[in-house]
Image 1 (spheres, rainbow, N blue to C red):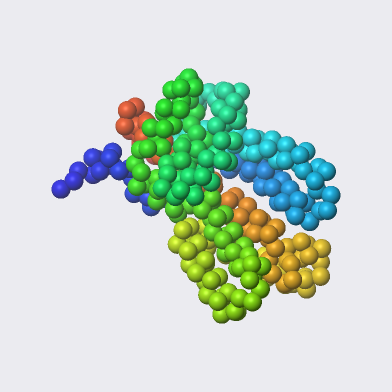
Image 2: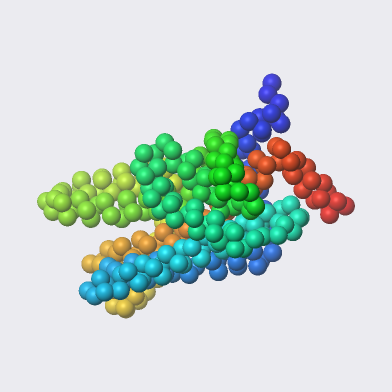
Length: 309
């Protein structure tokens, strides 16, 4: 019979347990912690929607594309710095320790690491196999508050990303916003692309192809796709109340079908709902990994018992 402690040390806590603990951590944290996350993330997602809409619809977008891309890049860095502070606040709430956060160093680390993910993560996703580890590396980079040197920091991130791969891949499969974005794009872009390539494609084949992409997308990111479907249906119902004649409807619908801007908004809403839980999962995951050496989980549990007594 396998000892439960040994099982936890070798494979990590069950995925459902980790997600449940992360939700409890978010619910018990002060409201300001979650406000910090949204203050960091909403400007980038709103900027992304605006940038995409202008680039797609404006005939003069080429004149200010570089400036708009620069602003969007700065908003991305702002988001990653804010998300790191959000994770540090969650970690402080979890452990009860008020560890000092070096904001300048955190800004430098996040600015140096996360822009590389814009190239690394799509390549790893295309290869498929290393995506889970690459995703864990960048998630732990967001959640980590370390004063170690650069080489030791990268080594620590690599070790955390490689730890408990089954747990990591399960969390990525269930909650990764990136997989949700790929699924939404596949469902909304591939069928029109088929019609563009071959306008004579039979309707039955188009419907069958759409159903196949939907099934693959749901299997690839079940929680994210169901959440995206809820947002998409809600937006379509709201647009139907306007009669399709409003300025907003003209941006979100093209020939009665959802536009690419519609898909971007759905992805951003799903990201804002799922990513705080993902970050909390990796805060807990990093805490559990470090606890194998530092026994921080025991100190945290003792603090909770004393607080409850």
